Image 1: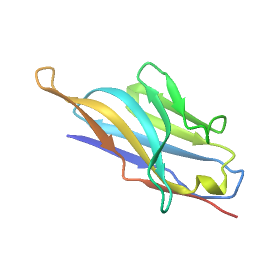
Image 2: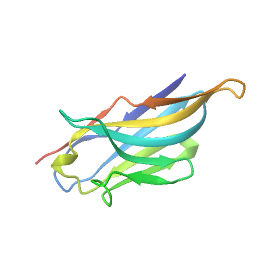
Image 3: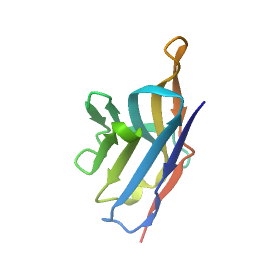
Image 4: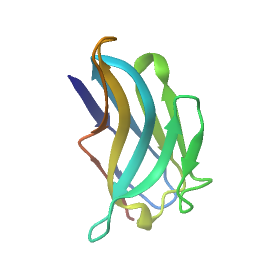
Length: 123
């Protein structure tokens, strides 16, 4: 069993900052990729940022230069630092990871989602 729990989010004024965290636990062998998605009301879920185990990153054009994804391999945790937030960043943010779990004799690669965190930029 693997659990993915995210934390952070909240209400912030335009120009402010927030940090989201996501922690995976359970029978984890390794994490292949980690990422953050968001879904605004009436819109499709979109990729915000992603990072591979080797440290390669990818960002949506709309957040480049403002958001930073990072990871702590030892803790199976990853983060999204969001700076210079704007009203259009308002959405529910979901963390996601492709995780190898199980044992060396019976390993499985699956995608896991966090429960979602509301980020509201208003003021």
